Image (cartoon, rainbow, N blue to C red):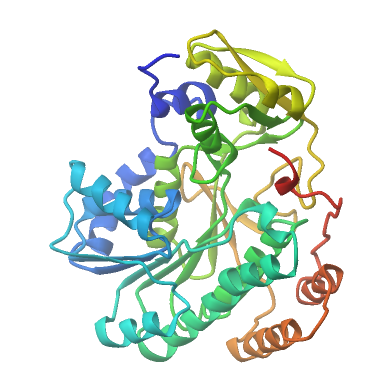
Length: 404
């Protein structure tokens, strides 16, 4: 196995096929506006220890915020973020703090009462995996995190501390969703835009972030370190952005967006990558050839020696509940602006107004629904379809937790 493997270089050469960030020209051409928006300001980043949140922070720091507070439920993630920032050439504000708390806890709201206001608030806290819709407990946790806590935060801010910029990350899977995760993110968009007349709120939908925390590709690094076989869908193609690009997209959406707008990357369909091709390139870059296995059992039976040239891989046809085989960022009915920025398109939120009090009643009904006994996944799907008539759930009865 090669010891000189460079992950950033691999992403550039084999996945995004871009030598610099997709958004670099837009960042450079708006540099003075970005400075005016950030310099001397107090910034709160929720879910900032993850891949997208941490890269948003790295994109933001060159514009000299006076104060940076990062909140995340992962204490270990915050520790690594701090080490990463302190070990880099970035200038970290003197007023820098991290807190391992859940942004839905009363302790967090007490903190906002005593330590706010923040001029810039960006929320990256999310349940992001399609696999997290396997049962009632996981679905309720996803809805509470992606939907209800976001509403409670915005309600608090609207009453006490309206920021200059509020950003909440979304996903391409919110476009005509077929899984609960995408449905919760579409509902999240409706929630934040119910406050668009009270404060500036924006969002961004974008593609897979190559080697992001918890992703299939990130898992390859763990599998090889543990001398375990790889497992990869045979028939799934995706748009990809680099971790750096994910930070740039969110920075531009947060600071340049107008209230009620959703940003997305302008990516050509020809640039979509098949996971199988990436897997083959990844192993080749490490000095391996694929040893293609016909089953998980065969792959796991092989004694892996990193000094040899072959590495076992099991390819399978994806049939996971809620798994789209294609990606899109908007629907034909959306109002799209492709001219304002070179790298990003913009969706204008134009749906019928949903005032916060109506949203509040709907969410209270959702909470009461979860309080019932013996509810089923099908009942939850139907309840979400009442709130999101365009939600067409794809159910196969199979979860990724059932395989490697």
